[in-house]
Amino acid sequence: MKLYITEASIFVLLIFYLPLVLFFLWRIVRSKRLGTVAKTVAIPIFLIIAYAIPLGDVTLNSIAMAKVCPKAGLHVYKQVQVEGYFDRRAGDYTLNNYPYRFVEIPRKDGQVIRLERQEDGRVERTVHDKTTAQYEVVYEEVAFNRELGVENKRYWIRDRDTQDVLGEWLEFGVLPGWLDRVLVIRWFGGSIGACGNDPEAYLFRSTILQPK
Image 1 (tube, rainbow, N blue to C red):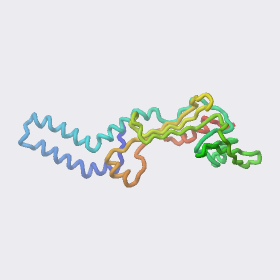
Image 2 (cartoon, one colour):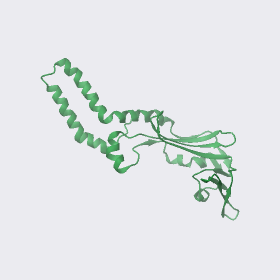
Image 3 (cartoon, one colour):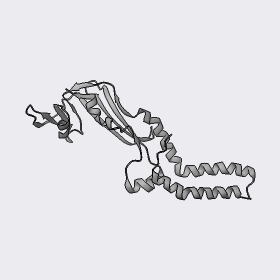
Image 4 (cartoon, one colour):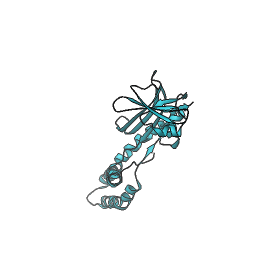
């Protein structure tokens, strides 16, 4: 199992924490106040506690990742050919990079912006009361999924008429241990590990909703 911990935290553990652990372990072994039986009990208990203090939450978080990562990535259940779709993250760049005829984007007031490619290549922008696209891209991002014990992203495509799911992209991010939060995340931010973020997964829209 992979332990999700940064090199910075490993460095601190090796340089500062490990010598301290070895010192106290040596004190226990050399102690004249503890008998053989007491040492036999005290040493494993001490080692477990010494491990759990910096790496207990790292281990639990890594176990959670080991459980979910086999499910990560792009899952295609059905491919369809379309002229366009509904997507709150779409924009002019969508039509500039993919040969769709139109994309529809929701507005905060509930109306829908429709970007449609004309025969002369010009993109026309209109506003409508509701979407007309049959297929929709849905985004779900959970900073902490209590059930899974990880950060969870699910981007999926559904048929708006039948609610059938055509495909989904699952990405999971590990929760950092307290040492990484103090040494790394607090100062530099970012993530210390994820699965399912393969480059080809970013093409999930055009892979599932193939332009006509």
